[in-house]
Length: 65
Image (cartoon, rainbow, N blue to C red; front, side, top):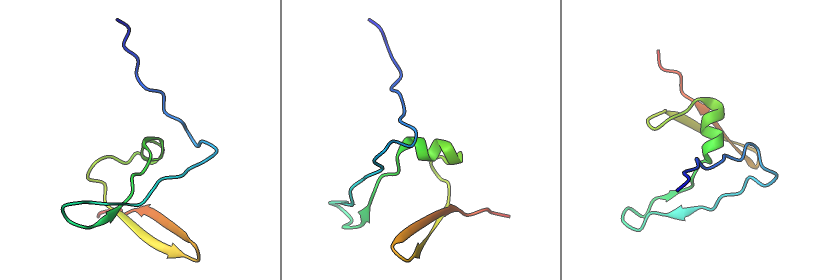
């Protein structure tokens, strides 16, 4: 049986995701595609800041001293 690693799509034509609600906490969330995390070298536990700029959300890594 052949085992393949799934291929990541880097910067696909459509970068859509959906807003979801956690059924236990009621908090809203959305998933960041793996290729985005890899592009920035982010991993579980990376602290990010979110800002609104017009109709865009800007997500940046918080650099800890």
